[in-house]
Image (tube, rainbow, N blue to C red; front, side, top):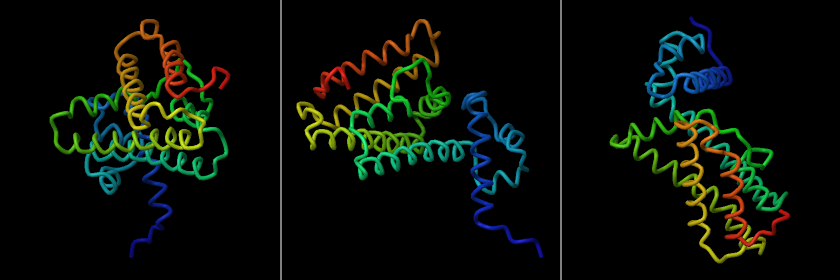
Length: 208
């Protein structure tokens, strides 16, 4: 009999494959990445890889889902604990733990754009894209709405509309960053300017 493998081991093995695959997608881009690339990077056999993921699309969706789920969980925890002002949480969601605009962009962003743009006529990918978009909107919407309910933010603008504006800005900046030199995009400066727009829309003091 073959030895029984624990659920914890299988879970860790899947996580290791996803971690290796993420790096491959960053280096190769979505379209140029193959399952063979992932097999080599994760040091697994073909059978070992396909035990967890049926194809490249399935694997990439799992990576996207994990990242979005972590954001949703972190946001839910922060809202429940109310440990910090919602403006601080909003900035962390947009710019990472530091909460400040910088010259860094999600290294997986170009592959994400490839995935959705090249698959815009594919029903499965469009459906998944719509689901992911709504999840993103809900995350930002919850934070903004919580700030409006406590009086930290102005309720002059609809929280859902502001959430969509944030996603449009972030996605647009990611697209520019993927195809243009950094000096043309001016990532940090554009992000700082957008933060000022948000402060005006939400009536947040400049000292925040």
